[in-house]
Length: 68
Image (cartoon, rainbow, N blue to C red; front, side, top):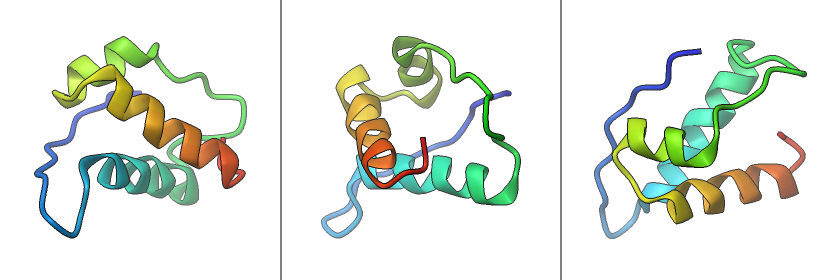
């Protein structure tokens, strides 16, 4: 799956929340299916032009909410 998106920080919409919503939308739309493997965190971070910690925070939230 090709990952590509531009994120802009704002006072009310943190980048990690935007990334979380991006992946949530992929899951809900069926573009990311159960059993699909995500690329390694550093690779996702590189493609999204963010730090790995930002991606980890997003994925951890998705995991705790039952999406991953």
